[in-house]
Length: 224
Image (cartoon, rainbow, N blue to C red; front, top):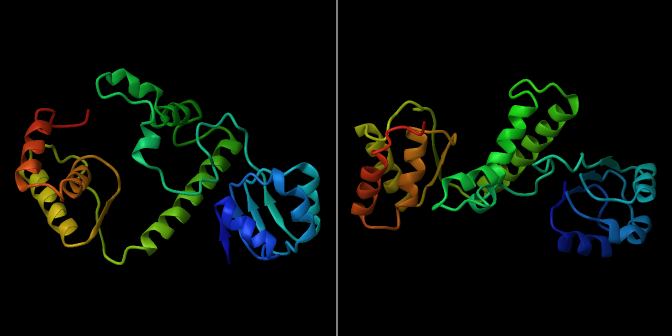
């Protein structure tokens, strides 16, 4: 099944009448109303696309499935087209001002998670938004991993402190594997998983650079 996640590729398919049977995700199609009325859309799925109501009704009547976008007051987009990048999550963060983290997307989403019931959301719409978001991220992750044949994942080890010898060992192992061409992955948590990405980050640098970084980090043994 073809997937369209950028407007340029979709416009090419639209001109060639090749939209039928495809998945179109998170695109603003409000300027393509007339073209959509003129092409086959049978079996197509529109996920969180911006469509005028009459066009939405038209494509649905001709065999397309439309999942409309959710309320715009959510701090995250349920129908993401790509993985998150640090510059997006920490968009307003200034290292010289720790308090600036509070305005970052990462912090805003966390506050929203707390305000809507944490792990047990009280709203069905919130539950749906989270599931759609996680599905979209999983899809983006699978596409990303498909481009990397050699992947090593390190999971667990949350309680490992930064002044633990094992933390240094994991970081060094990760650095070695990265230098050998492996992609290092983790569950994104603290401890051994933090050490995993620390080592991968320092792979291009001299060996002493990683040791120096660990010495600095060990002054704050845990993230708490």
